[in-house]
Length: 145
Image (tube, rainbow, N blue to C red; front, side):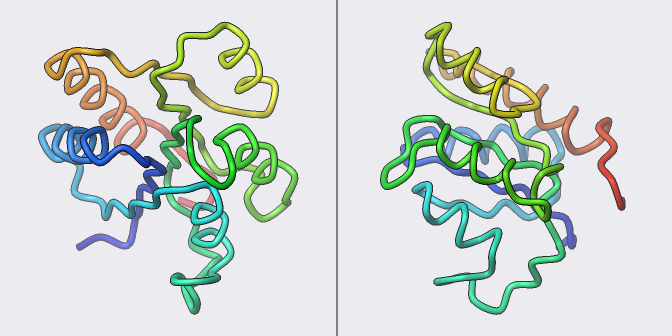
């Protein structure tokens, strides 16, 4: 197992499984941590709750963030992450089914690095995730790595 992590914030179990399968098919060997609501994203990043004791100096290499999360929406999570110096530069990909122009604009206004609409078909979904996974884990360079 690698010390690099992908944080997947996804409350739909089918989308979670499809995403993980597509990332593995793309050759992603990094650990994938799944959280299912907005509060859990922040708990993971701050080493609180079930993530108590996690080394918070080791940020995930990328956060794949659904917008339609319970407790705190993806947009609320994005805003909070960008407001904190410790997490401000964390790469964040909004990965959502929404094609609303307002969601796209608001995501970028709040500091998303990318906005990916989940394709409806399983094959298209898999191909999109594979391409995204390769880019964010193999091509993209983040500070300190």
